[in-house]
Length: 92
Image (tube, rainbow, N blue to C red; front, side, top):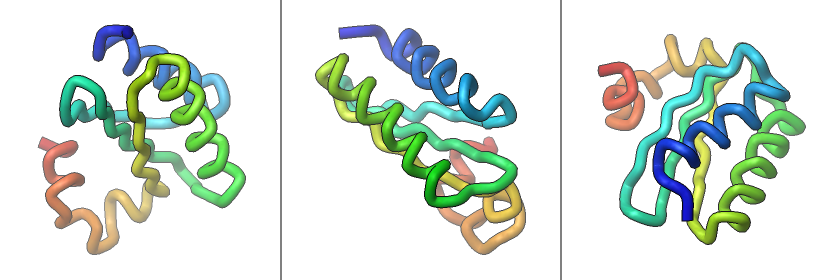
């Protein structure tokens, strides 16, 4: 299994190949569960599916669980979601 840092780097690189403007945060919950927050300028169903596919491929290849939380930039910065504990943890 890869290290946390290596897995985060692989995920980030794969996402940025498709979405160069992506902001990505990795949040490790345990030794086998990783959450990634991805913020893009816009977010539509095909983009969500592409991000989900990257997470699935890396999860399968590394025998771990990668989950993704996806936001459009405006939603991440200006909607009520900004008061959620997850977004607060990322911002601080």
